Image 1: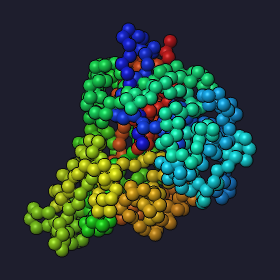
Image 2: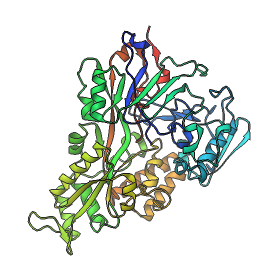
Image 3: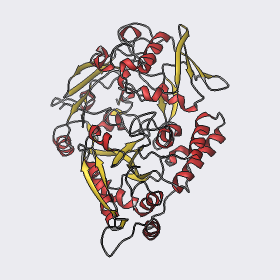
Image 4: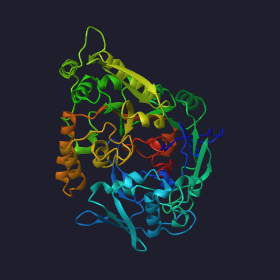
Length: 523
């Protein structure tokens, strides 16, 4: 799902603070239904969630109450989560928020008839009920401290939720009703216009309207921002950095938990070899990739855990760039090189294919750069474009350039699906795509997910990272910095909000505009 940006050209002669906020985006969402994934990261502009994100730039945000009145009441076994709702919340149609709205929203996501893409994030939810008019009770199948990250889903009015209807066919897809600071004024494949909700409980937002206009091509988006008066956009690092020092513009880089990495298929004789997987991780010069492809906007990724996770992060769980050791490991595994030729073993060439999403130039360029580095090691990598639907049936034999970090606000959500042996069978093909299986890893992941003791959890997750670097499942490359460009007169005319640690899905609903409803005009 893409949560995203767009814009329109402001009328000439307007003062900047009187102009609409007009954002150019690579694509617009196909649906505005929160039960289909829109507004599902705790920053809903139309449909709000029980909790929201609060934090400083570059730090792991805290999850704090939004529609919830206070922190959850959690049972001793961590399987029962009881949440009291605020009693001053109204939907934009004037009806009051109550527990039945929350229950209906979560039950619809769980119901297979709705085909909600959010169902996988609630795999551990056994039931949801309403003991009182303003109390919601979640029952989990097993203890899961990270369940709080599942409380960022946008809530819809129960009267408009049909658990028998696919979310794609719901009226909420085009005309959502929410408790948030904005209403939908216009929505098409080319444009999404939001206007301030005059009944919003903390006051009507001053930044209104907010207009998102689709502009799929990166270069065209850059040119339009430079010449057509738009407020801002998201751009790949190199294009974004071309605005650095240019009069009238500011460049922002948001730290993210959004990683890029290559799956290593289990049915390819080369990439299924554990020594080869380790050799690939040692051979890759991650910093060179970041400098050359990301224009410096990123950090090396060795595991799925970044430093923002504090005590859960193992700083020594890294792969030191060592081509000599990588070459020795390949020799030990029987993948030998004759002269400058591609390595081979028992008549099989040391080769594999990397698939990338054809609409993503960053994944393409990273794939090509990895192929160039591995060629020097005697490994031939073919890079091919393939849609996700085309890649799925090939995922056991061909590698895929993947991105992750969808729900990064607890370390459990970064690790469990990517490393536990119950996946990908328990989820999608891109969960644990290399079919990694290690009983000790499973044990530590389960301990980290279920333990109520923070120190036990942290120790388990540090152990997970140590196990991973000893026997990696993938070729992780980098955590990205998301780069945005905004007109400099915005800061002259508005008191704006700061950046947050961003997930994989991002765009102009993030960056400098993540909490745009909090902006106030300068006098």
